[in-house]
Image (tube, rainbow, N blue to C red; front, side, top):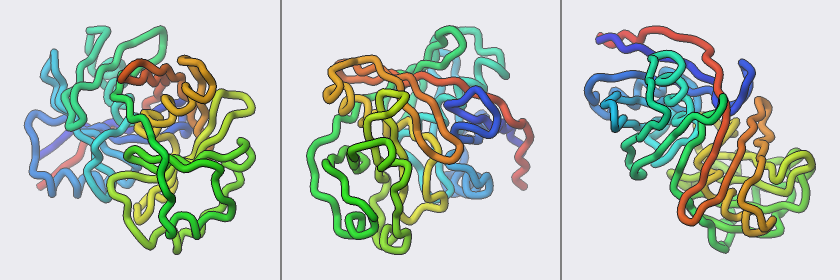
Amino acid sequence: MKFNYYQIDAFTDQLFGGNPAKVVQLVEWLDDELLQNIAKENSVDATAFFINGGENIELRWFTPDLELDLCGHATLATAHVLRSILGYDKNKMTFKTNSGPLYVHIENDMYVMNLPQRNPVKAELPNFIKESLNKQPKEVLKSRDYILVYESESDVRNIEIDKRMFDNENIDPGGVAITAKGDSSDFVSRFFIPQATIFEDPVTGSAHASLIPYWSNVLNKNEMSAIQLSARKGKLFCANQEERVLIAGKAKTYSEGIITVE
């Protein structure tokens, strides 16, 4: 069996920035074990598998470790493949996923994702996370992911995590988002995943489904800019809606190829 794949840098307008995703085009679904093995072999944060049904595009996402319930950057990467490489000529795409329908439309040169809002609520921080941090947050919330709020962008940049302590437990399928008001953007963040092959995710669209409603409430504004402060960095343009969030970004194609499974 042979499958076309594309590697896309999402949430960036420059190669080697943003978050890399592999996008694999299928004509029918493969066995879950095979999908997981392909994602593991790909060795990037997420691999998106899609079947182009025209009006409804089936979409699933896998990290090297597990299947995700929602992945923003790999959704954006898939939209980029469909539009820029495969010639998808509709201005709006509808993706059928395990998190319900997701929508992407093209606005100028950006892909605008419409995702379900995941409003976080106040929570207690588990000891294994608390004890791994060199500095404690001023506020702790949780939806799928833990949201740790700090005083400043400098706190987020300089956070140190004891990985051995942090990896003591799994919070599958979520992770830990560390966030603060930004110096040159409305807010900034970083994202870490216990017991994951890739410890720090470069740009995490799905975490912004929680970060956006939180910061919208704090800042009293619905349209915001965000930066994820990983080594690769990512820029996101965000909007809060009643039960949905809009996340917009750019993408660059890095490579194309063929996966052969015999």
